Image (cartoon, rainbow, N blue to C red; front, side, top):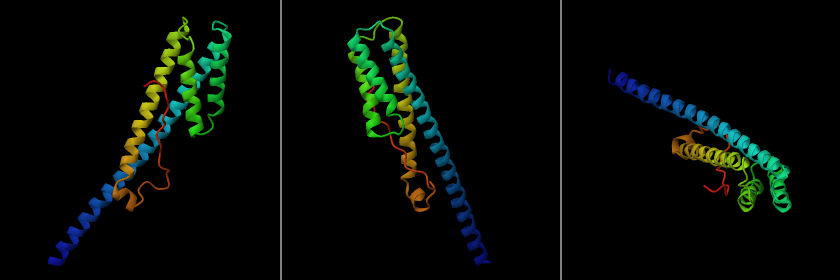
Length: 164
């Protein structure tokens, strides 16, 4: 009789542990999916900003030096878009600096460019918040001991000089 209660207690503990581990693994999977979605959103916003800057530079309303500076920075940001590396972060930050350094406050471009810049800031913040949440969960002992994250790589934050 005492043995059956002990086995029942052990079974309940194992069942609860399994349920918690399963729930944690599912949560990690959802967080990794959200990281991927947030990164894709950030990529989209960066591409829109580069396209808008290139369009502004080619519109002929800025002085030639400003147009050339913006066009070069937009081109470098687009060509560095293959992978997230330090070079990509530097190219996107250089585009932000070029936008701020030139007189891009020409109507109707200023409102549209300001909105594009704000959308990049928000997308980057959203991405980094999700990455921090994912990394916090992955650094728990239970997750690392039982490899609940599977083979997913550790996500990293994206640091841009975007005025935020």
